[in-house]
Picture 1 (cartoon, rainbow, N blue to C red):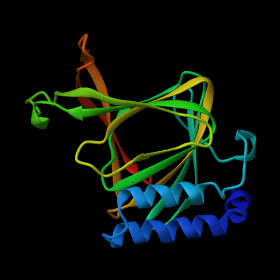
Picture 2: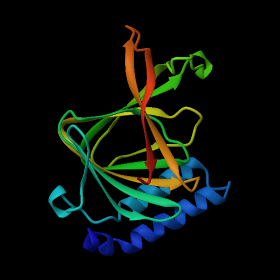
Picture 3: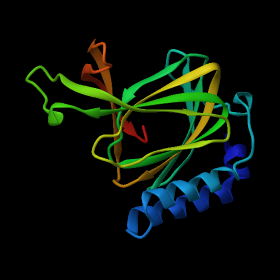
Length: 200
């Protein structure tokens, strides 16, 4: 991993500068950030799973590596086996841009219903929104809205993607949701099953 990081040092440093500009400058909108991040991610050298030797298991068919971390940026590589799924989760304290290195993923977005009301049991409802299929060398952004709940599922050939997180707070967090009930219209009743610190 040290060799991979060193070989891409200039690209990571440029991405870090962009993340700092995004966090500290209102003139750098989310769309500008996403567009510039996608261009810089294109400068990362091509690699395969075999080139990355410091991976961590994340769930069934999922593993990840973190080649670069600073105060305002986290670079993450996610490896997904065919059909593997990153459960519905949100982002707190950071915005992310994804670039597919190999394969494709389906990104399903959800929003809060009932005005985000949480009952005493900790349950609340989310409703389905936009579905995006991201193919190899394409980019997708998960930005810092009030509701950015999304689920990521790998295609039949699996997927590898690169995430760049701009840290709007010193420590970010993702809440992952357990689906308790799902209606025919796609509405889901969920509760938080785990919270993961970013960077972990």
